[in-house]
Every structure is written in C-alpha cells, then in structure tokens.
Amino acid sequence: MRSPPLPSLAVASLLALAVASCAPTPWEPTGGDFTPPAEPGPFIHQDGTRLVDGTGAPIVLTGVNLGGWLVWEGWIWGGGWQSQKDMVARLQRLLGPEEAARFVQRVQEEFIREEDIAELARLGFNSVRVPFNHTLLEDDATPFVYKDEGWAVLDRLLEWCEAHRIYVVLDLHAAPGGQSPFYMADPDSTKLWDSTQNQERTVALWRAIAERYRDRQIIAGYDLLNEPSPPNGEALFLLYKRVAAAIREVDPHHLIILEGTSASSDFSMFTRPVTFNQAYSFHMYTWFGDPRREELAKYRALSERHGVPMWNGEFGENSLEMLRSTAEMYVDPANALAGFSFWTWKKVPNNSAHLVGVTADIPQWTKLIKWVESDWNARPTVEEARAGMDQFFEAARLENCDVNAELVSALRVR
View 1 (cartoon, helix red, strand yellow):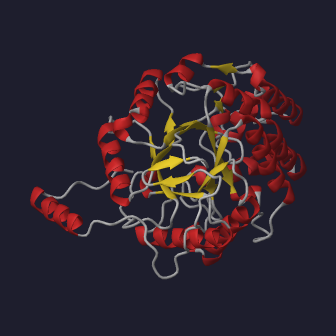
View 2 (cartoon, helix red, strand yellow; view 1 turned 135 degrees about the vertical axis):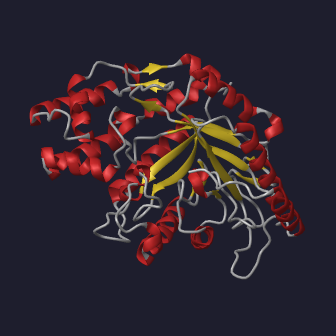
View 3 (tube, helix red, strand yellow; view 1 turned 90 degrees about the vertical axis):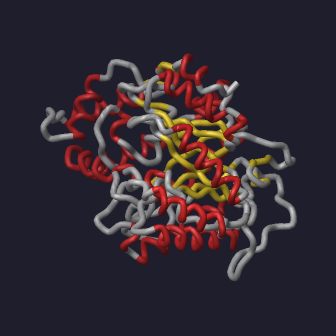
C-alpha cells in the first residue's frame, strides 16, 4: 500500500515547521531504558549512523536473504502465494500428518546446506538475513515451550557461518498470530495485534533467542519483525519497546534492527530510537514506478536525524538492469547505507532475475507444488508426490543449481 495523498502546500509547510521544531535526538536513556554497556565487546555494533565490527573498524553488511527455508513462500519453490500453514495443510491432506512433518524436517535439513554458505563467502558476500517462522522454535499448541530441534537448526547455521565468516541477521518473519495478513507472515485468524498472549509470546521468544545467542559474535543483529502491519504506529512502537527491553535484560551487546510499516517503508511512528545499539531496516521493491532516489533521501534523513544506521533488509524480484542500478545506489557513499540484503538466495526461476536458480527438470515436483497452489490443478498420486519431493531436494542442491554470474557482478559485492 502507498501513503495517502500529500496535503496541500500550505498544510505541508506547517507540518514541516512543526516537525523541525521538535526534531528527535539520538537515543538517550529515559525511565525503564537499560544502560548501554561500558564496552561494546567483540560484536558488530552501532557507531552513530554507521556499523562497526568488534575492533571498531567500519563494516557494511552486504548479503542475501535465505528466503523459502525456515519460513515458506510457495512462489519461491515454483508455486503460488501460499503461506506456510496453508502449504502444510495441503500436504497433510495428500500425504497425512507424519509425511507432511517429515517434509518440513527435510526442508530444514536440505534446502540450505553448508555448501550454500561457503558459496556465499566465495562470491564475496559477508552476511545472510535469515527469515524464520516462530513455529521453528515454538508450536502454537504449546506456547512458551521451545523445541530442541528448532534450536539445532539455528545452531547448525551459526556454526556454518562461523566457519565461513558470514554474519547472520535473525529475522522474525512470522510472529505468533502473524504480524500482517499477508502470506509471508503465515497469519492466523487471530493476528499478533489482536492477542495479548501472541504479543507476550513474541516478547518471550526474542528473550529466549537473545539469552541463547548472547555470546555468538557471528550474529550481526536481531531483526524484530518483518514488514509489520499494526493497527497504528503506537502499537508497533510499544511492542518494539517491550521486545527490546526483554532482549536487553539478557543481551546488552547485539544490534537491534527495527522495520517500519507499509512493507517497511514508513517510519513515521519513530520519534526517537527505541534502544541503544539500534538500526532501522527499509525494504524496497520497484514494481510501480521508480521512487528509489526520493525514498533513499527520506531514509538518509531519518538516519541522520536519529543518529542510527539505515540498512536495506530486502530488495530484488526485478530485471537484471534494475537490480544493477539499485545496487549502485546502495553502495554509493552519498546514500550512507549500512549495507543491503538481496531477496533471495535460491528459488525456482520466475520472470525476475535469479541469483541461484533451481533449474533442473522436475516434473513431478512441479505437479505437486501446482496442486498445493490450487485444486484446479491436477492432483498427484501419493507416489508422484513422494518422487516429486525427492526431485526437489536433489535439484535444490547447490551443485545442481545455476549461479547467475551476471547478477553476482551486478550486486557489486567485490
């Protein structure tokens, strides 16, 4: 959704004067805020409007998203616009709950492997943003109880990234209830904003993550909510305050990353930073016009006004030339970004340029994923579905994928 029409010139001028007269300042402690540590420790952290590493050297996080792995989006696998729970329900209908659960486990084990992380490093990227569903760690039927097998997935990823020196941004893409009504948030009928318990679960989940990983230097930051769609800006600000306070109780060192509303393009609810050691993250997709320069100027102004870094958490799904020119803007020192994370690392190719394409001929998988998309498509047999899953995981192995050298070059990571 876009912003409503701009007010008249006279009203706009009055608004501009009002904003200028009460311009917010960088974070300062107020009642209930936690005091920053005396030393930042060996972690990536905020230094004014830039990020620096544990030695104090400036660092720009240039990386990719690991979309379609720990939270599902049907189109990434060649299907449609389904949420994870809808896809799981369809697989349960075809195969039964046990086989559907085994497929979930195989996705976690096989869609992204250590070879993917090694290739990211070889290509010159230095970070990954890791979208995850809360259900990786906590089943809705047993709230506040965290799953050992979910922790094992994240632990294994961090070990790979430590081995290959790839920083990690953990991104809660699908909070309890869903922070938006859109498929990528895996929403329920009762959203995050409609339920006190869902909000309490979100706060507790982030506290548990921070407590477990407080000493892991390979984690660059915690991205608290992907593209939230609250009833109003105050609701988002207050929830962020609660989550940040819970994290700071156990982890004073890791960077906290906040996204705005309207697909992470509207930051008007932030009159000041929420916590110390914070960054903002905007997303930018250019499907309707080309507002990139105006949007970047807006984000740069916010960064300077609040004295915090601005990072691009998602962009992509466009032509090679559009992606090339966008990356050029992002690395331009005049825009003063703390980096970017391309969407996404691996997918079944569509009409947009792919970075790593699952390009093998996989007819039985295609039949399965198209039926998962819609009953209008042919229903596979159980045997075809099982064969299709095997085809998909084999085709998704990095050695069987197409790495797009032109797009790697366009992203300007070297």
